Amino acid sequence: MERTLILVKPDAMQRGLAGEILARFERRGLRMVGLRLLKVDRNMAKRHYAEHVGKPFFEGLVAYITSAPIVAAVFEGTNAVAAARQLMGSTRPTEAAPGTIRADFGLEVGRNLVHGSDSVASAKREIDIFFEGQRLASWKRDVDPWIFE
Image (cartoon, rainbow, N blue to C red):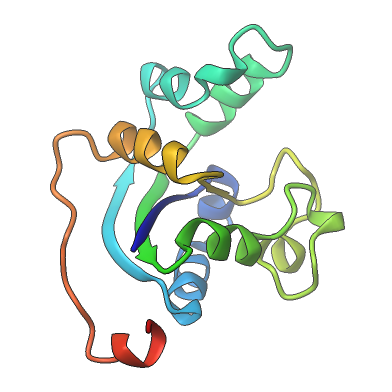
């Protein structure tokens, strides 16, 4: 089972879309094993966006992610990273496939509602940032045999 980090970003929170977004990951078949509502501080934002330090858009990313509360969630399942990224859609909402979160609710790349880890290694690093010192739930649903082989 893979794990992936999902962030419901400030624009989605301001628009009241957190529940809808999280529900889509659950309906896809991914199992939620961690959930937090938090206000990201500048230090956490800098750790999360470390690969973008020095780029012209870095300060804008930090200002955006710290502007309102977010929901951080960890989902697990077979190919969780790829499944979550497919469900989110292209980073540019106007290029995202119909039925994806970003196509359904977004218009601009800078307000694309949701973040998902881009690899298993990134997921581990990001989960460590947003769930530092917290245990994730380990559990099985009765429907899991109908979702995972």
